[in-house]
Length: 439
Image (cartoon, rainbow, N blue to C red; front, side):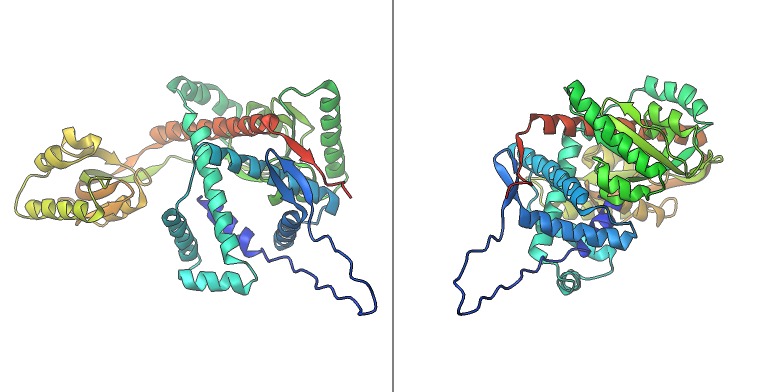
């Protein structure tokens, strides 16, 4: 949840509870039952109610208004939102069945980070939410669900994506040239998802839906509004905006279409295994110039925290080792004997480190040291570290950075494609019954 944290926060800060109208009846009139809620969809053994849909609809309308997105027709927005809720419900059901859980400690830490990003204490953050009419308990559970779905994607999709050296070589030799030497695109898109075993009638119906969306875009309607009305992509309610993507992060089908567009132009309907797509090129920019960074040659000793070694015990061990270093012990010898990292056999040597190669806590402590200095114990998600900076240099890492970026771009693209396919399979296996039209 990187930038998604701030996106989540703005989404939920826009939320408010649906106010219930208090009904009164004249004493002379007989009392009559009033239906307060009804089922609008059955999702496997679970249900989505009209009240849940209305609450989410109220939130989304506020979100669209804050973004300045023209409001789609209410019936189309309701259908889009219901589909989003169905997909969320399916993922949460699968997570529960397969043991994905977020405990209270993890959830509290996430809420603290969100509060800190908004320069508020946890108490101030809760007060700000409640002042805006947001039920904190519901907000807390919504954040829990977002984390669960992120963990689920990580386990089921992202961790299974691999990128070979051959794929990187092929991309650098071919895709980079096709894309004009590694340009970047800012784009938005609309996806009309197609089931895996769609009948010819279903295909024609879905293609007609995509063509109708394209027709409205070409007629001059706001692309964001059309995306919110028609797109089945997770970012539909954000106007379908994908942000800046390099060629390697996009399917070849998209790159070929984008290369024929000028900023502001829209593609024709494109067909992929996942469905029908419409792309809008918002902007594009060229390849970056050579990249010189300040690198640090560093080594470390890592003491891990686990079921056997408590937080305090690990820190105490690190403090004892630091005392020995201060009294003249050799760093590399202590690392070989005590470090619980793969670098222990090399005396803790991590080689030359570029900015961003390590976790923020480690990098901040490393950057504060002069060559030859030892750090005090430093806590990171991996455990407690003792760090020594050996030397620093300025290095042109353009080639290494290009390969690293290419690998990351290919990984992102493959993960996105795999995630869409996984969602489609999850949806195809599910039992979903719509009751929106029930009276």
